[in-house]
Amino acid sequence: MYEDDFLDSLIIEKKLSENTRKAYSNDIKKYITFLKNQNINNISDISEKNIEDYITFLHKEKMSNKTIAHNITCIKEYHKYLIKASLIKKNVSENISGPKIRKTLPNVLSIEEVNKLLDIKLITAFDYRNKAMLELMYATGLRVSELVNLEINDINLNNATLRCIGKGNKERLIPIGEIACHYLKLYLEDYRSSMLKGYICDKLFLNNHGKSMTRQGFFKIIKKQAQINGIEKEFSPHTLRHSFATHLLEYGADLRSIQELLGHQDISTTQIYTHISNNKVREEYNNYHPRSGE
Image (cartoon, rainbow, N blue to C red; front, side, top):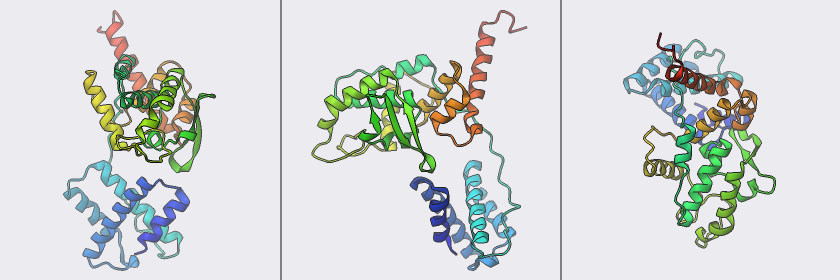
């Protein structure tokens, strides 16, 4: 059913990351399996009704609206590809709409909570690694995947900048604050080599086995550090990234500059932080204005 050709086209045309490709692969294969179970083995036999039946099936599987919406996006891209490749004449997915997704604001830490999180007792090499890693994420707003994929040569401490390859294989240059630079230098000069354990690894941050830090490993570290320092707020892997953007906005940074630093393709993605900031303003007003309760 040309699903492999479709996935290859996504990598070439949209320059998707390997993780995103895997997500699309899982979604399209599940869709194709469903169609084959309905005795549909030819792409020209797929109807709009078949797609609607598949969406009903996903609801019965108790999938979230967000997951179903992603599946629908994948199906639409698949049928667009079939049209573009002249494999079918009619796009039966164009009238399919996804479920409404309630936009939720990401969790962010206050500046006090960030300071609390970054107050790490420095004893072992791993403490210095964790300190450098968390300071760098808050200083730059990197995605977790970008952080763990950094290599030593991506960091320029003399210029206080880092080179990052983000979504869509796009490169951006990000300034690094003085505090993050200080702890990065300590980690690199005094501790990183002892963590290699005989391996050769160009990744900046190493795990306990001398190999590259993973997304899962990073999340375990930040969650554990939050618990140790008594931060009870719900965490996501991107909590420090969201906090970085929100605090920049609250201190007067331009939205376009924040967009560039975060590597957002569309300004509308960055605008979610204005909602967080507005909520903070409202909260401060309610707490401190003498007539806010009238």
